[in-house]
Image 1: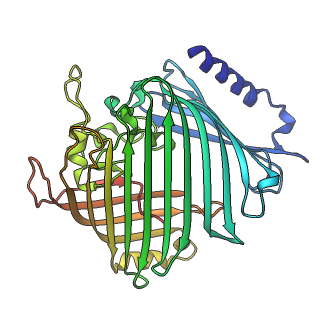
Image 2: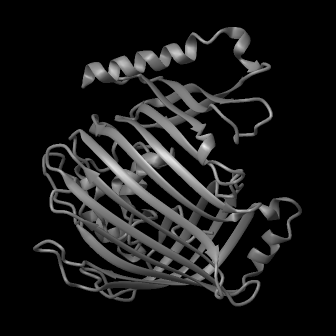
Length: 410
């Protein structure tokens, strides 16, 4: 497997560095748009590289032969100091129409101690020119492995097994009598040793009552078979570890300071998202004794509901009135309630109902892509002041939680 990774890495480096110089920039048939890139984590140090966008001139990310890639050098020179990411997308004309494209996608990456190589078939159906209403289906086959645990914030949330996976997922966004809603579901099969199956589903509903008042509701469920690798299992409060590889902020240890992660006062949104249990979950993920192995509190199955009630806040109104920036910046204030429990699909899972309630504030920057999908970040400060299962804590207590990402977005 190491030889395979080396071969793929060499091939990609040739792709980036042996491109003729006169092809960089715009040409008649194709253009490559380079941009410098800097990032940081505790293993690579400052990672220096270049990002490349490739497209047919004038297509604005919506034409044939779309390329998105990057190659980086780690200034602290770890075991694998050169890393890369490469995605190539090409439409399938016979199955495509305006706003309803079908395409195939090739993905290859080796970075932050994780490799991922795969091929996907994607299809979208859009209602006319309104990119807010759509249906999508994706089928992705991939070979993946976490080969260096040093990059992970909590190593016991990961296995080092090679995985050959097929994932079928679907998403629908539209509106109904209550407001905008979004539904997505996915089924995954891992074929190699210790094979496993996972099914997930999520429904989000926006219920506006006024310009500054309203409800947001989310239902989530996930079921995994007995041999599921720990990075795909569900904690009560945060996204499964595998989902952290899809965002540069969470991909490797140290971009978010490790003391923040270990404090229990920082949450990466996702999964069941019972945010009040972040401190309890984090305490089960690691030990101050490096020689002690801790069994994390993870579940093979869970069902949860998350609800938020937005209320009037003058700061949010002021953000909305900022010329131009108000179209992209948003400030929310809300009360929240979360509840969830295991579905007990395997033995020894608890039958306890976990619930929490509190108040929160969020700041988001969103510049939608050409399909109208969110592209930005959400930072939240939340105060879970009640837990149904406080453990060694008090039931009512002011808990402080910083969060990256949001699970109820439109």
